[in-house]
Amino acid sequence: MAITKEIIDYIAKLAMLQLSNEEQDNMVIEIGQVISYFDKLKELDTSDVDAMEFFFMDEDEVESSLRDDIVKESYPRKQLLHSEENDLEYFRVPKVVE
Amino acid sequence: MNYEAVIGLEVHAELSTKSKIYCSCTTEFGGEPNTHCCPVCTGMPGTLPALNRKTVEYAIKAGLATNCTISPFTKQDRKNYFYPDLPKGYQISQYDLPLCKDGFVEIETENEKKRIRINRIHIEEDAGKLLHGEEDNNSYIDYNRTGVPLIEIVSEPDISSAREAKSYLEKLKAILQFINVSDCKMEEGSLRADVNISVRPKGSNHLGERTEMKNLNSFRSVYRAIESEIARQIHVIKSGGKINQETRRWDENKGESYPMRSKEDAQDYRYFPEPDLPPLIIKNELVERLKKELPELPDARKQRYVSEYGLPEYDAQVLTSSKELSDFFEETAKQSTNVKAVSNWIMGDMLRILNERNLEIVDIPFPPSYLVRLITLIDKGVINGSTAKNVFDLMFDTGKDPDNIVKEHGLEMLKDQSFLLEVIEKVIRDNPNSLDDYKKGQKKVIGFLVGQAMKATKGKADPQILNQILIKRLED
Image (cartoon, rainbow over all chains, first blue to last red; front, top):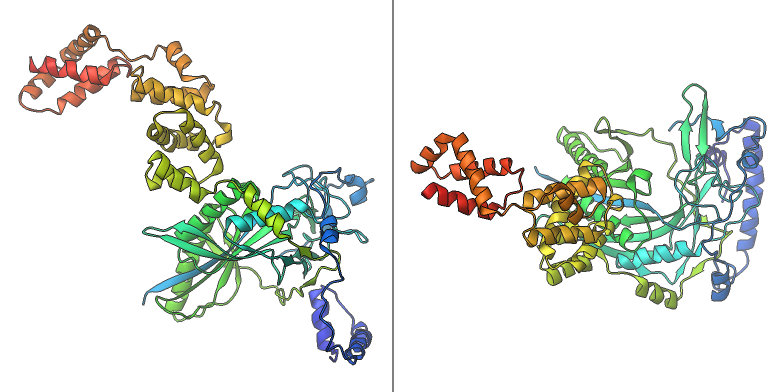
């Protein structure tokens, strides 16, 4: 798959990133290189290997990955918000309007 | 040309687990902003989610109660979008392998039962709350709700009217409350609905272009928004226009909807399997255990009220519309020998008083046994029906039991014949024309005179005895 400037532009928009022209050009090259690794991988014949969406895990391992429904203390807000100095109660971001 | 509506609902219900879906913060509603948060639910780098077992169990229960198939193998996926109410930049949800699928619930329409199919139920995490600064150029975020577990219940487009949509939603709410997996408080946002609507010429198989309506957080909003959107779409089509596929926001105050500014490319969520969580293998033993734990569901209860108590379908329907109401009725009916009266009192005066005083069932200041005693007082002829209504009001005022209220206020029925005759004589003396009218054949005056006599005894006269004495006196 060829990475074009249009694709970079589209992905940047989805990620709400503003890229300069130069950055876009660089991305075309960098992401293009990453994608081409996959083209390399595709060269290997895997027709007799089953598709695996996940790493292997047996039922007991899945079971033990679950957490019991127990409430523990939350994080101190001042630390979470880095608000030691300004007493902020909320996370603050530039205004977003739909 | 006549048009028909095709409607599908996406219902989000917050699960009533104690802790959040991927961390141990509390799910409690309210609380000071950002005090129910930790590095996991605020999406700090380097944190890992750990799935709450109860979330899975509650969602499976919801699936079983709505006749779904439970997937033996399921996984979670990332739904990517950037909005500040979502701290990670993605929501962990389920994409192509939902936990439950292919279910249905039955609703009552005007003349028949109708089956509304459920496409899927999946688990996901709730987002935070955004506040927009009035005076500054900032938005403020409270992440307390972020990570509260949700199920999303997606119906097939089997709904044809606002009324059916409301019935469907009421049925879902009742089921989720009965099985105790969600409190479904629409006013607190723990039950929310998005509605997809299109219209087409009646009888057509072709689906029209649809719109999605968001921000519906009361049964009333759902009903009004659908009525309004159906009318709008038919109007657009009849005047030669075209329906645009768009998302609209309902404004409850104005009673109309408007299109939300279309977010370009917003529908490209780039789902992919959540790499931080293993897939889920749902063992049959778990499903069987949860199936056994399911209590009697609203439909079954309703049928039992009809067969066991001989209640009319309609009464049984109302009484099973919420778990609290149904439990209150059940408790009362169990102790009473007059179930029909119990049903009448609950459906009539009790619901009226709750409504007038804006109370919930849990706010009722007396136990069900007090209503049983009130009904016994009527059945034994200690008080009459109109006094009983006053006593019931006093029970809500004071929480006292009816026997005490009757004693305290001296409300026992007056049955003393000579006393009642005296009352009647006085009423006739005060209304001399009535005797003549009666003799001229106007039987209506009986009602009037009884009313006057009742008034004179402050409603405490035994109506039967009063009637007998009055007729005897008039005939003499």
